[in-house]
Length: 420
Image 1 (cartoon, rainbow, N blue to C red):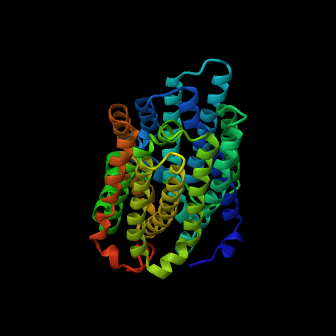
Image 2 (image 1 turned 120 degrees about the vertical axis):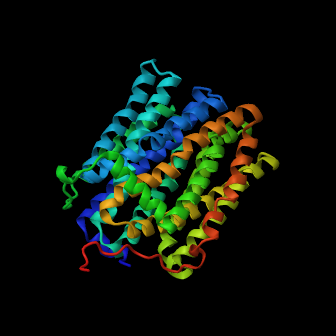
Image 3 (image 1 turned 90 degrees about the vertical axis):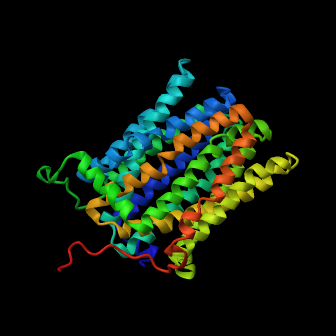
């Protein structure tokens, strides 16, 4: 596996790494500022917060499969640039409308849906772009490096946001996120790759191309098992996590500064996970790491509702431990399984494969958010978090009873250019 120092010598990697690091830092600002804005300034109910989570992720259920087929036809870097510009304009609209005195809750839902749709195309194109830009033995290192930079940005970001929110209104911070999307689009424009748009004459009906991607995911047993596990985890995580801002800020009475600190500590876990993923793959084995990461993540999430039983001044300590474990294992799990499926999939199918998986694993998230909002409204946020925790603990069984449990190295797809 290529080391990071070798990748850093490539101009394409430096541009990609720089742009994505800045974009992630901007997203840290909005990721914390938006829920604080919704809970403290718009005074949303648990059900309304659930609707917001649904709007943010509904595009993965509605557009993911189409996005995969289209992305395989288009130049992926250009798709990423257009998606960044759309997200810049959507995020930038929030502070403009708010300070003009025109902002309403339904507009937050609309902006969330627009950003979510652009993110579908960006994510599908991004995960399909990595194997085009880098060699097979560079993919795992590239993914690890990109995630590491993201987690570094995530360490200081939430604490900084928590401090800024004590003196600034949340919409101010969204301007920085809009700028970060612009920077990402600019850096992507400097990358030079050899991808060209798929010839028009090679295209077939969309439903045929979409079916090929879904068929590949279903027929590849390792990818199918991983997809079921990720989908189960995401369903129950979104069910509980969508209400975490209300749980922390209202139920536990956390200050915004402490709320930001919790996310910073979680990001430390993510950073360590990103930094150690490559080493752990070699030490534990790729399949074993995927399985172990999922079990530990479920345990970490279960600590969130358990913290409600403690005196509220001590609850943040247990939450920090839980979020640290969840973030650490989320990174080791994602880096390992994403790198594996990028190697397993033939390059002409990458967009449709990633979109099919996104449809499965992110398409359940708006459903989880919607159900979580209803449970929180009827039975309370602690009950919703508890349901999410129980479901998460069982997510790993899809991969535990599979060859992954004893697999040291994940296989690669046959070279489509190799001679028979």
